[in-house]
Image (tube, rainbow over all chains, first blue to last red; front, top):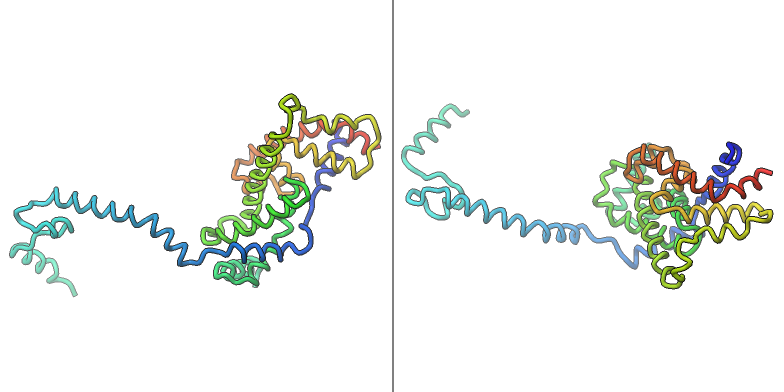
Length: 104
Length: 190
């Protein structure tokens, strides 16, 4: 194609531009939205919760099992070990006091 | 209130389900979506349906819309994807009726009329037909860049591809169109 023919083709392509659908397009969209309403915020949150909850539960169980296995079972209860709580002893209470003495 | 603030306000209201805001957004962006969808599919009920679906999907995904791209870019992206899906559906439907021997003979519709003078409307239809014969990867680039008049960068943003890819696809598409339409362009010049 010669440059004028290329320009002609580009012009023909630009002429294909259409700037509106058939009249009443917005009405048709709104009617369709009423038939297929938007999901409410509650429904969206519920969907995300359903996806995330099993993952969160699995992570909690994994951490609890890891804590229990890592804990010294003679010094703490199974619950304290699962929650990763340090053993409560007289010595640790003194350490805690010393750490908070300087606090305002 | 600037246009961007005004649009943000409309989007916030649309998120809360305000129908007036939704309608205002449709009216404001119908032009962009119509240009893209009709450029991809041609005029008709299917284009209208894809246009409606584009806005319905947009309103449904407003919760995920963070405003990184403009509303028109976001809408055009949805419109291109839905148009490509519609083209695939059309092809699947056609392939059930077309004889396997005719597959690939896509220039037939243009070639048969080559011997005579065509009026502007016929040439317009031929350009559209030639556009319709472009592969799916090339057609959106021509529609956005040459018909909708977006810049190379804007086209790249809508299609989420590098600018270099836009340029190379455009060059390939224009070469194919030139090959198919050269005789009619010569006529149109005279």
